[in-house]
Length: 114
Image 1 (cartoon, helix red, strand yellow):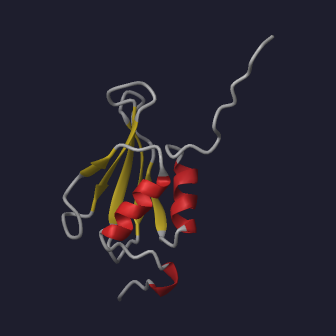
Image 2 (tube, rainbow, N blue to C red; image 1 turned 30 degrees about the vertical axis):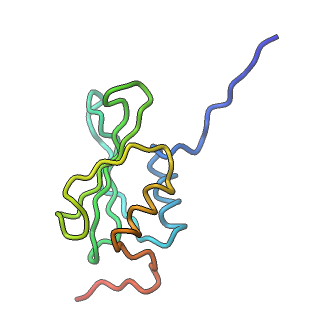
């Protein structure tokens, strides 16, 4: 008897899924870059709350071990330490970290000041 293991469609390392989940949690998220070289462990970069906190989040895959994922968050050291790395498979960890470091998740109230 054959057993089939289903692949998870919605992985935190999938840029579209990551963006959707952050938006569902009230953040404004823009795609920034996703054309890294195949040998590069970076997969994509997004910008959270542009014009306000402006946090870049870069997804890394297979840095040390195959299948391992890590996210680097950088706001230039304004609200969080520069280049903080979170090794996680959970979007809740990312959302919690952003909220704990005063990144606004009330997209309705965010306005880019002109």
